Length: 234
Image (cartoon, rainbow, N blue to C red; front, side, top):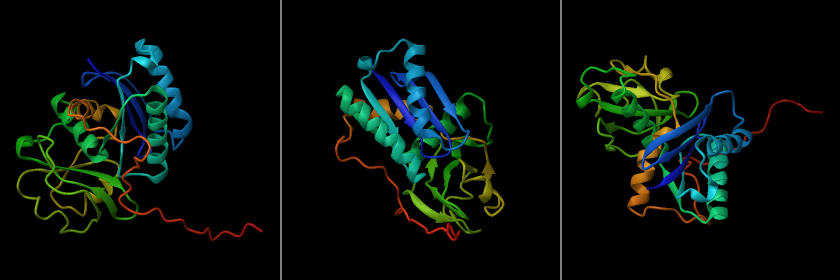
């Protein structure tokens, strides 16, 4: 039996959950702005109290590794690494697009979303990367990756190899702006959540796929760029 604390902070949503053997026990989420640095610790404390789980009973901490918001990822990963170091437990990293796809699959299984021809669908989670660019990857309905993670500037012919095979289902905080451009795509309301990490993290832990706490870094995909404000301060 494994107890895993799951943390996903790669977008505007701050999400923390506790899972036992891949099944979610409890969840805390907020989409009220980017206040992750304060909320993630509060959510962890609330979940431990609610479930009656003591910190030293945790078997691992799982974190969404990206791609996503530079600041959000650093907050989540830093908090997860600190917990793992202090509790002397493994760190499990899960691709944020993999986890987002898992949320979509769970929502379909639960009847929350409905897509005709789901079995032959191509699932494309999209995380907003500003303007018409998204971080995206294509999966089949079983959650198996069919493409590499990429920063995609969305145009009418984007993802042409995957469209027309079955329903091309797009979701995530970067999907709505792309729906009109990707003619024929199916937009569904699926948001990043720590619950998408639960089953994937358990599988990784069972297979011994853990990270070096000292050297692990988020998967940013693109370099962080500092811009100079045009406002005159003095």
